[in-house]
Length: 157
Image (tube, rainbow, N blue to C red; front, side, top):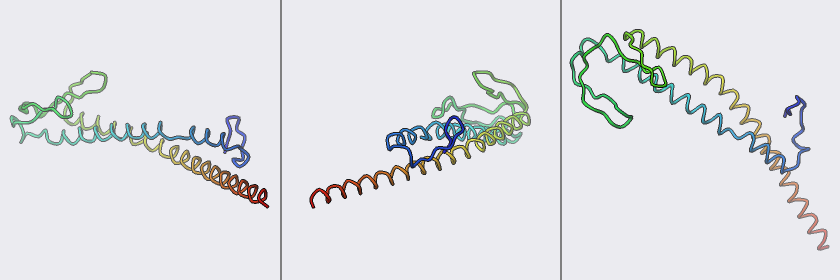
């Protein structure tokens, strides 16, 4: 295991308390949350991209449900199948053609896919390091128990 100064530290030389602290530091909650948020955003962009496929001349002036929130919809009518308003973040909307919108969502999905691919190896490495620390903790605890049992049997004799 590498220390901050770039030196290698033998885990078996660390006391159990330091190993526990190291295990807590290797907790993946930050990376897991980041990964989940990236996948959620990616899913929303994919869904938006798929919705643009339904804006066809065949659906012009047809009744639709317009989402106000993720669980509340109002009735509406599809009046324009050439242009859409795309939320580009922080309350800004840009009018785009359907093809421009599809391209925008495609770029967003590709960007998020690359970010996910960057985080996955880090998560896997942190998981491997945590597993190694937990194995050493388990070995040290077993060694302590064995030593205590030996001491108690030696005291009884």
